Length: 403
Ligand SMILES: *Cc1c(COP(=O)(O)O)cnc(C)c1O
Image 1 (cartoon, rainbow, N blue to C red):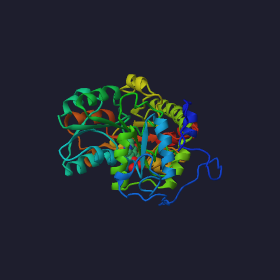
Image 2: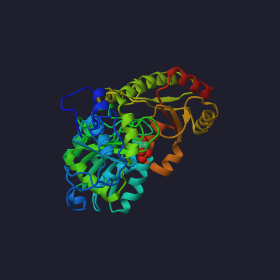
Image 3: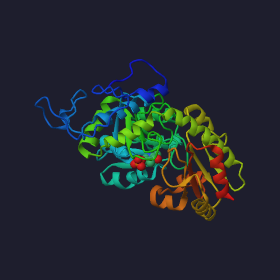
Image 4: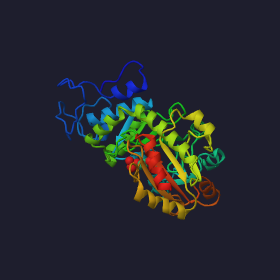
């Protein structure tokens, strides 16, 4: 796989890294290699432990040229040595947990996170004998207090789904280093353009590439980018043994989306800023959380840490009854925005997340963690993924749903 061998800008990186004209045909666009197996030129072994970075392609659960192209593109965009792509963002999260944690180890996880990760951490990891602490990652004292002698991993998410709270990655990475633990960060909301996670001290940068990196809502996938030795370990465990590999067709779709990521992120950010400002001025909207607004509770951190504020806007419209009725209005009246889960697509998406239900099913917070969640999310969060449509059209749509 050719990599650009001189420094180039982020747009050029996104377009050209991980791909090159096809040597067989001179095709400018990369082909899709759907082959599950490859004709061997040598008598070799068939164990994950025989695989080296220079091994020829042998079987597509080990490695596939189209998937490898996407991995090289994401590694280049994220500024890491290597990347592993898997079948979904959840496969990427489980790859981190099950490669680097064993029975008797301890992990510190953000108390609020993507619901699937929250449930995996609370239900599955303890069943495997892994100790789990959930903390508010914006509270550095809480993070420090949670660290134990057997802490192997700190896993955070910033901005966090669905409430947009930020983690100070430089500060948490210092704590992880002192503890001899790895720091992994789910940077799905930020995208690789949203912050330089590696420079901030993150060891493993995870994305649901279903979201911004793919960008068009037509393929599910996940990635983890990081140092080559850690990624090789993960490839053996998560891809070759657990087997949740990405299909070449999805890799090709996501790669085509990724080529325009820097351009799209600028447009997502501009659209979200306009919509967030309009929402903040609307009489029925009680709160708007967007890192690009001066009113964000961590606006200073956002300005320091984020290089693109992304397109994710969370807002509230009063109590749970009001939220439910606006959600129904949205289902009935929205013409442009789709009322649907997921995010980071060119189409705008909105979804109401009621606090009570989320606390019961996913987060199970109590005490000060619950108070802190409520202070952020009140009785429910409208999670709006601002797409690439004209901001005026999104505003007109939202105005219909809010009136
Ligand atoms: C969607 C999402 C995931 C899960 O990714 P899938 O591709 O749906 O498996 C993980 N983390 C965050 C922040 C997400 O938004």
